[in-house]
Image (cartoon, rainbow, N blue to C red; front, side, top):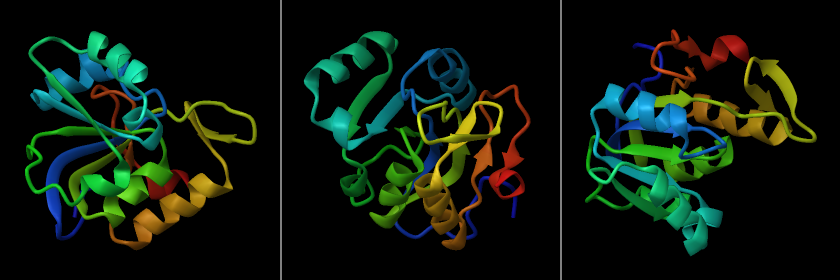
Length: 164
């Protein structure tokens, strides 16, 4: 089984789930969108799902030919109508775990930037975690997912298990 992939997919299949605390930003728009060839972004975050102003700011950052939708992480996995090639963005390992528990089945679970914040320790460049993040990553790995740390498509993916 290759890094970033799960052995078997049960639930709502999607191609790419990315954990990145900045959600929609330049690396996603100019790097990941063309690399993945997708025209669909789904932001799965409780705070953003309930904040029309944040949603509008993100819509303005996305090219006009790309659809963007906003959902809660828990509800995302039960939506069988998600485009398979969707790029799902979550802000934290907690959000990713909620998506997975809800039934989302990503082919690739990508970890991008989790930046410095009070209470978080740097474990790798642009990867800062606290105890809660580590617990959620351990749950994700124990469930059979193989997350990879890869900030941009040009970086080599590193299995998160090797970093933790």
